[in-house]
Image (cartoon, rainbow, N blue to C red; front, side):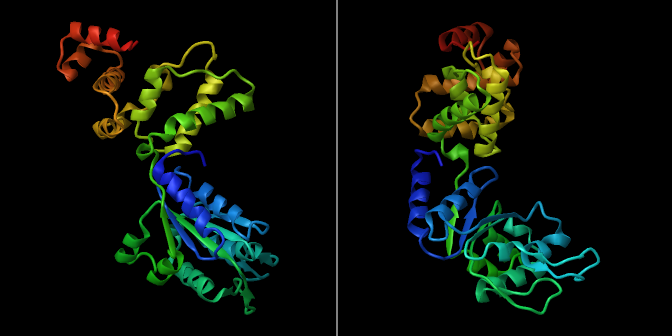
Length: 308
């Protein structure tokens, strides 16, 4: 996990602190923030590291198959059960189970999972034989499980058993100091993977990456860097217009966040002018009206800030 953000460094410190224990963990954060990576780090630092780390995406598993996926089934348990099948929980015995999108579980499966956390036992679908397991659970959700409990859509007892150690991962737009590090890391990674020369970003492009809201967080940034490596010739600097970002996600709030990073007025002015020019697709007359300046002043500011 590549970071120099103080909040993220505290999270990594917490991961080292809690890894040796067996308490269950609940990780909350937007999609693409690295919840699965943090879970893998905790497992790798734990005494369970030699045992399986089993990832289960509950949003990608059909609802009618979730119970069998988790607990397994015996032959004849349902029409398509032609043979016994071991569930993912049995396969993870002694290790760690990462339950992504835990909020997707229906009430019946929530009840069975609560028993596993409490008694470390369950029965496969269609079986009367009890299976015992030793598992550490790390549950992840984009939604606030506490709010879902208050709304009655998530079991309170399951919530408290999963939330012995709660961790919230902030979105990338709150971790601006990490963006240059991540950009370099992903450019290095994909340049090596595709055996291509690594392009350079001009200061305007990097400033724009720091102003962008990143709705897809680190995953979106990684995808963008991969595309740049594939599509750019590497001979010239990448400019803001070549990023092809959705500039509706560059908000005034982003600029306020940038102001908190002790950027100069000139730097913020440059970012805002870039945003308006890109939103108006280079229409200088329209951009001038939005900015409240005349066309000549806009041209002077573009020259001053070296905006193409």
